[in-house]
Length: 78
Image 1 (cartoon, rainbow, N blue to C red):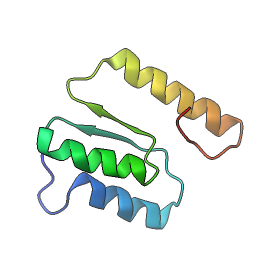
Image 2: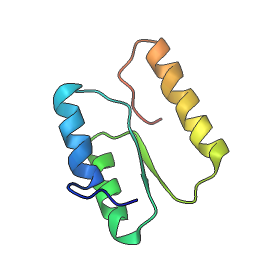
Image 3: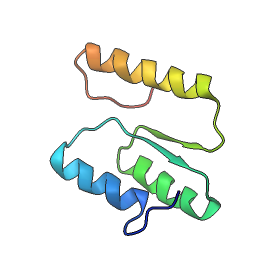
Image 4: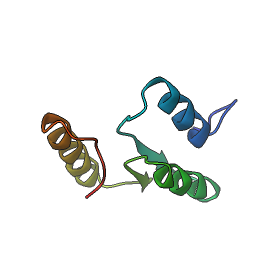
């Protein structure tokens, strides 16, 4: 599903205004949107996955995010 009024990068940047350190996993199915996902990662999104993605990979990333949050650190990819 493509967002009708904004792209994922714009949504991510708006979210960062509300919560400066969100742990965000960007997801895209569209080649033309992959550059936006990469730009979000440059701006501290945790990572991005291209659809179709492996659910085990998503779960592994989520577990790592939760581990970092439990330890009280700012969530960043390893």
